[in-house]
Length: 163
Image (tube, rainbow, N blue to C red; front, top):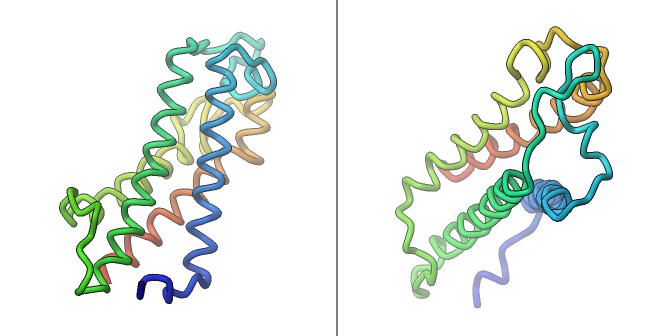
């Protein structure tokens, strides 16, 4: 039971914060998948005349929610693997993934959220041209900075597990 002695510290707080953010966003996507309307239209990019660029189906919302839950699972597996790697006398029960998956996986996840923060240079991200829509304003204030924060935490985890 040596893993109980692992100190929480800032690392634990940041990882817990990341998990909570991903969890809330996943729940929001499942809410939309099951027909919820709150925040739906303001979360979709639109043209200046208010025409939405796309309207995701319930299935697509659910796929995003599942993807976010898989990211949370990946974080938990990485934490468990890291904890057990410091305990030589106890076999890791989730060691079915090779270490390189974690080494590169957190970099890939950080890259995905960085690309989202940068955007498509038209409707989404920090460098978008269309900024005066409901989505554009929320994207500038909240969505893109949140994606940058999430990517930073993923990169921080990636650096931490490789040292």
